[in-house]
Image (cartoon, rainbow over all chains, first blue to last red; front, side, top):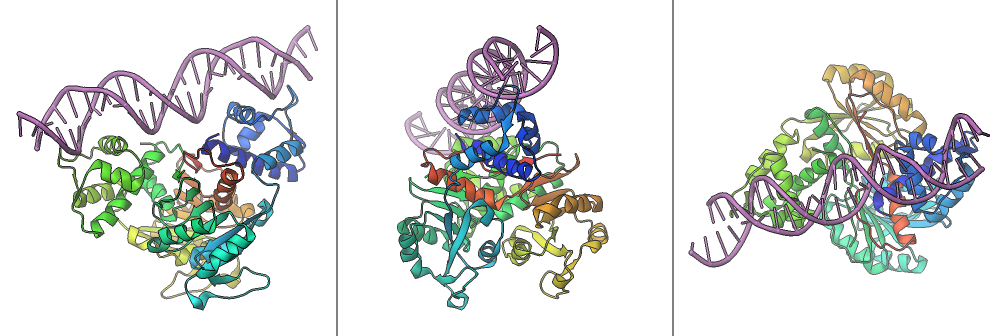
Length: 217
Length: 217
DNA sequence: TAGATTGTTAATCGATTAACAATC
DNA sequence: TAGATTGTTAATCGATTAACAATC
């Protein structure tokens, strides 16, 4: 169950959700493959890897499939997430509407700059970084987003890990050193653009493969 | 020269830049490997693939290496980029400081919502979507960012391609259908979080591999 | 020279794909 | 039944890694 496989499953889930909304009830592996941009064999292989089975000749029941995938992907419970860094990216993520329907809730943002602090009723509050630990511990939050400048990122990660956060999405463009029992997923926005620029500048030939880097440790 | 390889090269470049700033003059493949999180063999293999050579027993000259990588990666010229969508993410990207030092300049943002239009002197202007085509053609812009809701993304892509844009970073969480001569790099923020959540919910075991999906066509 | 590091070839590893038997 | 689709095994493919010769 490597990461690429997990990502495909999440994509299947998303596509199925869309198809479900459009009124479809069942689906064949090649329809789903097409929606996600992989091969039908890949879909069936992924499913079999996770013990998902359909009906020979009858395809898959969409609602049952969604149910199953949601279970596998930890969608049963609402996931609370904190952000550290109330700058451009942190703020955009706080306001971003796309998380909610996937069962993800940004519950707080932390920053070192007092001018950013604010308690809000409806929106996400921005608090002092010192409050992070107590907040995270009290609510047993396991997921955090790092949206601080490169220079502060490692220190922020250390704080988060000390507070009990285990999974991190890191937007700072630097390789962070974590502990063995955490997951760090790096998102580097500049790199995303640079990659595209490379292929445009050099003629695109073949651009196949995956982008992101990830770390265990 | 697949995408994963390109990304590694870009990471080498970034790491070298940092090391250069710190005053280092030369470097061995295993130092660089360590900074980026790959093996020394991988570094040398990547370099040899791109015709970069060092000195047997002497390592690599950092400034020459940066120069070489910049050339390969299209860093010689300033890259102008437009954004479509002046919402949370679009706005964050407009204000983001990290692009400039990598030779990337966000030159304009387009939206359909007139309440967002604004001409700015110092910051990025937000204009009507109808102005996109003329603007892009006049300035021969090749790179664009899609930061609109899922529902509008395909249409926006079509506009962009018609205007002559060839490389796209897409933040809408949907698979876009492009033409054969464009590059689409999808960044799905929800997916980035969901992936982390998966590993936390299911125990992280091994999280190795890469995240992103990409498309040629 | 001895030791260390590069550059490259060959081996390994893992993931994707093709083939096909099972079966509805 | 005939045809279509699943589920799985085996083959292929490509990328990473190991090994090592070249050489500074």
